Length: 246
Length: 232
Image 1 (cartoon, rainbow over the protein chains, first blue to last red):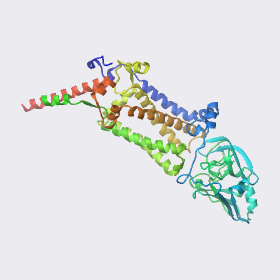
Image 2: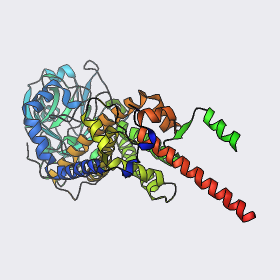
Image 3: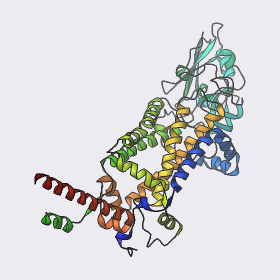
Image 4: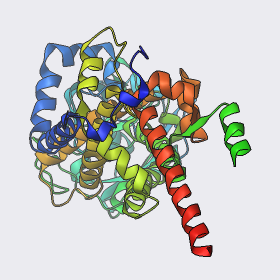
């Protein structure tokens, strides 16, 4: 090993050499910048490939950027948690009869099943998510909306997250109060045990950890709208985005 | 004079591997990188990080750390005298000698005289360097997405993700290699390594350091005799 006498070792800079690493550096930089143009398509292709599908179903899509994965957002310290036993949803405001519904009350009503893509305003999309819940319009009819009522204000038991819909939007058949996701009680990360699911709008409209639906006389922008997002958050027609509607 | 040089020879000799500027840049980078990693994994929703919450705060820490990270390196590179060794490192990292190729291609690595860095370190530097370009560019697009089309945003997200995972991989390797060689780690913590380590692991760099040292000694000699003759 140290068989060569040290004095025979010429300095590194005096050796014949090739810029191998410099080429790797330039190549990787170019790849990264080119990836901005084509990376979305490549990611789609990978996600739809057998590897991507396997990653999604094995649940490793959370760990590695392979397959489709939800990204979890919470606006307070940590995730607010409430058991199904202690859960209560209040429908109040400009209504004839105020409702106080437990998890079991919701689950005993006529269920609506929706299997649709979940599209976030930041760009990620999870295809074919199965939700079970009660149509929001059913709950509104049950409570009896007064003529002064024009809009809804949703509150979350995290104490901070709020959302809004007009009554017309809320009465769509693809707007539900969801208590199951993929056949199981909605998990805490996903906004459970009960969350709003507004299928035709970006994810932030689907208020998580839902504990109150108040009928009000005008739309009051919610948490994310105050952060600059659009109030009417139709997928593909708002927030400067052109995603495929679901 | 003679007694002094024999003292030096008797003590276990050490060589300066990374000077104060190189080490400061390294540790500032390391700190900011760990902050970026922790906040980045939280923003990405890595399992086990969801409880952190406070998305706006975490995002701001991530963005500011990202903006700050390249500054120590750029500042040090621009310093004329203090940045000399750092600039020298960069030009060493860029090129492969024949010995580097042999070390990379062959299982048997005896008789190969590496310079200051081995080819693995050089490739790591190439990836980290490319990340220093790709991450700020894509990060900027994610922070200020308005001017960019949907598909470009998705591309930027994908690149930011993949380079982040690449960094996680190479930096974990970097830390494991450093922890498995105390002497190399000492080079980045205290700046010096033993001559024995240098001769064994980086013979060509060792030879360079000896040359440099003898050149410095010659300079000193000349200066001394110069002042002496001036006095005369």
